[in-house]
Figure 1 (cartoon, rainbow, N blue to C red):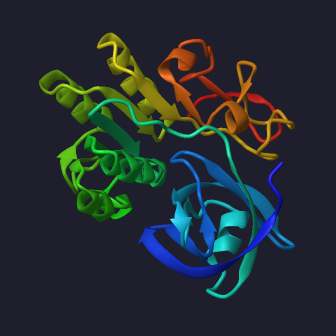
Figure 2 (cartoon, one colour):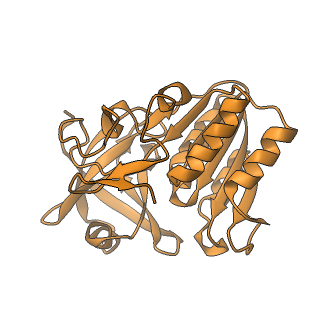
Length: 260
């Protein structure tokens, strides 16, 4: 188990409506797709994907509950406890990669794009959101050198429709060596299906309710595996063996629920 380390908040950045990035004073190296457990003294501990790795590392989060509300109210100079990084991250395969991000999943895909381009790969990014005000990190990825394709449900930016619509068009009209995805699981399942038909290497980051971060509590179980330890990033070969992928999830209490 990774030891809990104190980190001082350097800044809070508003990314979009109800979405912030918190960066820290200090260094934490993580593979794209790995996560850390953040502890707010007297409040709670919860997982956060690393959106900036190395020096002044950071996490990006949506404000959706009491824990993230408390996190969003913290100021530079205050401290949190962090353990990790945990889990399996993304790998770069081939010379041209198609990345598909939905909503806050962009925070997981952004460091992968940075790594891929640093290794000499070309990257096309499909970035989907419900509306223009929820698009995050577009400029970061364009500055890194990615070709960015935007879709919004309401048509306020880019093409009107789903990220999977643009993904289908790109896969029909261009050649890629691999595909990766992070976002709503139904979106991921759609992208996986397209990739499988073309026999393209595929990776995706899945989201489940993580409590311990080290594969003990079973809250993030999926078909006998644990998202916190065996994932969060899974290959297409592993996803093909998971009956719950794209279909079901566990509630915080362990009750089996249909996928939203």
